[in-house]
Image 1 (tube, rainbow, N blue to C red):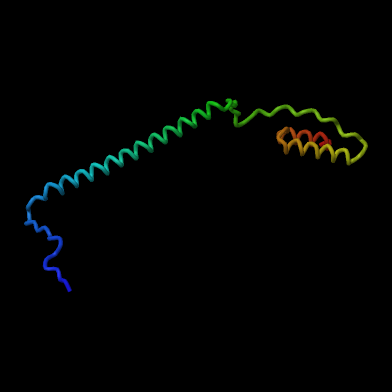
Image 2 (cartoon, rainbow, N blue to C red):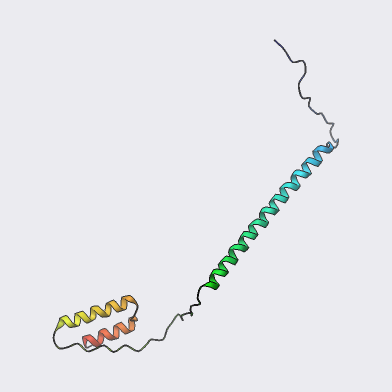
Length: 124
């Protein structure tokens, strides 16, 4: 059997207070500078992506046709005239109320217009 007589790598023993070897200083500084440059490049790339996203959103908004802003509270419009119920019977009144309800659900009648037309139909 072969036995090694000495270790392959000898430990570097540095006296206390002695300066680090020049290679360690240069290597450490280069490593820190490289990390700093990579961090800066990553921040720069993130900023460029954010700017590109904002420009794309602005272009998309400009491409869409402008829609007029609707006021929060619209003035009530006068109720549309509804034909009075014929004296024929209840089924006609129910049919007309059903039609009014459908118009209100579709958004063609405001709640105030619906209430006024319903009151007119019911004779209240």
